Image 1 (cartoon, one colour):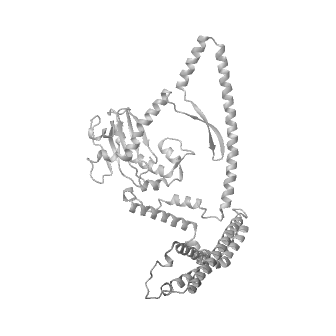
Image 2: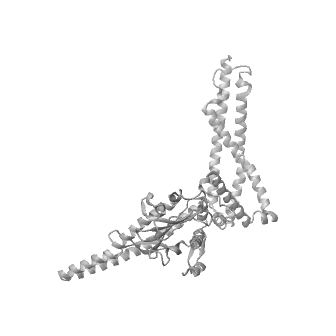
Image 3: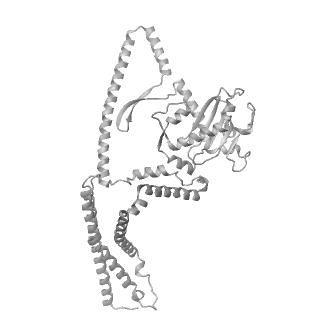
Length: 476
């Protein structure tokens, strides 16, 4: 197709004029939009979180301004852009329906792609109108007595949130069947987490928080914490100065003594250091508010008692790892499929090497009981005999399945008065993680029911003088 030079100049002038007009209009709209956001930020700082009335007046005006006048810009730009695209593509890009384009069409360039993306953002800007309409409909429904009682009450919202969380965990169990989840019934397991999540989100109050409120509150809290920390550090310095004065007096008294007496005193002090644990002064919060200076004891390898404690900790930590990964492998050849537990049918004193942990570099450990049940209340555990340390080890697995994660989220503290009365300790003013307490109760009752420890610590048993050690990691 051959066109004249005048037609080409006219076409180019028209295209450049539209581009210039569109860029100017888009720049003006962007400047107005930025100014509106800055005004909105300033108005959000008016009033207080508990008295947001003055703030809401200005915010409503700003939203109404955006809803009516400012949104005219994206509408105009969107209409102009769509008309320009239609004009560009009309009649096969102006070449006629039966003509074949020799070069690539004009709408295949990168600039055209950016132009279309900008039009999409303008279309999204217009969605504020249906959003405001839906918001007004929801507001009217919430003011209705019937819906307020049956739909928007705090209790009903909590039930819906609890149901949604349960559905999420159920979907995860379907997607990842190896992670458990078969015991999840969505029947109150997520109630504690849902209620605490609603409290955190401030779902049942009229407190109006904005980013400016959170920023100012965080700054004030940091200032108060810094003042308390400085005060505690000053007290710590005073305590350290008094300690240094006491050491200097002791050294001066030692200088006046005889050589034999001084050597004897130095020897006794060195022996005392070996027996006594050293401590450091640390800053800790008291009741979550004030800093206090606390002495914390340290374990030192030079101290004989501490070295024994560290050695035992290293020895028993292997059991916590074993119950995660190797508990079923020991019994895989001897148990039927889908077995839930194992109790060794044995005569005490008899050696059964097939139940030894020698394959895991623990030939001194023998398995006597194991439970593989894992539900909302059940937790996997093993009972072993450690002949090296002469101890009976109960090792409990930690978080490793969806049921365990649900238990972790049941973190509401429960009082221990009744548990203490039945188990023989004073539980007054003591509390425990709800999920951990649930698992501990089941574990205690399951061990009593199987009577393994009763047999091991019977009068005829050679293990009756062994110590009882409980090992666990994380939830265990």
